Image (tube, rainbow over all chains, first blue to last red):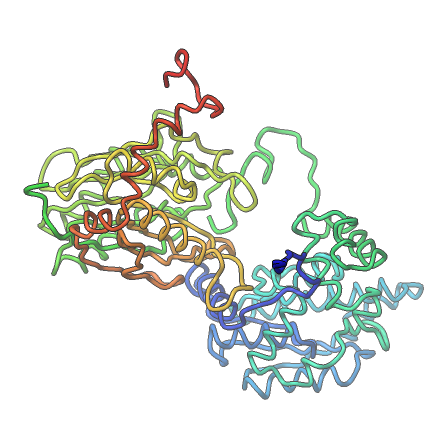
Length: 283
Length: 300
């Protein structure tokens, strides 16, 4: 009799999964603990871009703090796509959260008028940083804390403006890949339009994330989730990924470690902060 | 075991300490003890780093205490809350004359006398990924067991229990109950129904309890520390590997249970793995291929 042979195979390359109920419970506990118990702050400020990340962040904050304590801000620039505003409004309507719209055009142009040669990248960075100026100032006004919306994929790929999108002191989505954020959005009943639309930074006309990155989020997440476990490019290719995509992802991760750190400080003493003098953020 | 009680009433205080605020957390612990006073347990167990929080980095040197000071503080708040004597186990950062440990004490608190019955210093200091213990702390060098009115017990702290050999040695030395104060940052969201780290802990505890026929008494810290959520899930596992009770992950709470200590002998009779191990142990440990120090020849 010939015995049946059962062979082990490496797992197929798929995007990382998520148990949305477990993740939601954990993130709501995180927001309550960090805001209410550790800091004694009961209000959150969230900048609503019209995209899925900020929508999920607002939904989680509403669960954690109550809708009346989540202050949404829509911060359009004159070139922002009109649907960004209307999509953000869908979130406001769904959650019944207070919302204010502050046009940043005058503030951004107040500086850029002196820099007529600024290219699209520089102009986008000024807009992103101006939005953080507004969110932090409104937080001070409202006795609230700005809550960040950046996800793990964009953090790993360096696809964000340093000291802008990454500045809020709390970030519930920062350890979730984009594909996990999408699943969470469906679970939380984020308006379907926001889940299905192509993600965009909306800093330039017709811009999309996946166009900028040169790879879909689903494929980027599948590669990233394995790359972080320590596999080499050859091993990732052997697992079924395209070599050019693996190299693209590796290049982006390896060239952006600095964006995931505080500024580099010259060490001169044996009491250098965060080098020798080590205290946790919540101490 | 004539004269040993059949039942052990246990309370696990799953605490959520304010980071670094020792006195405030001691006061909160006193309030938890007051909750127990109406029906006092025989044994109260608090988590690892129960009164300071776990991730302290260099602040550990500001908050570490001599074991006797910590023991006296806990004994005092117990006495102020409850007239009944009790055993108390709790984790803390220890300053032993300038050498620092992640420790746990086992106290016998009555109306007078020094309370320390046993002091365990964590032997396995996680220093990888999110953990950095050995950067700040020294490791303990001995796994001891100790006698109580309810039988022999042992203390392990968090990663100590991740190594199958530690409950094994505790059981071989006679422990019938192993107490594990712990602080475990929850992680892993791909599994259905619960965090992967919580499931992993439960598997480890169940395996150890069932293999050796011991009760496992596990107290987990809860609360978020700089984004890292301590996963609570305090639980008691019986000698057949059954989880008698388990706390949720993110809530400060008290878990109570009454352990039937006769179960230990019954479980060992049905699955005599500990007896089997004792018989085979010399062959295993005298194996010259094992990287163990030898005094001379094959002698350990």
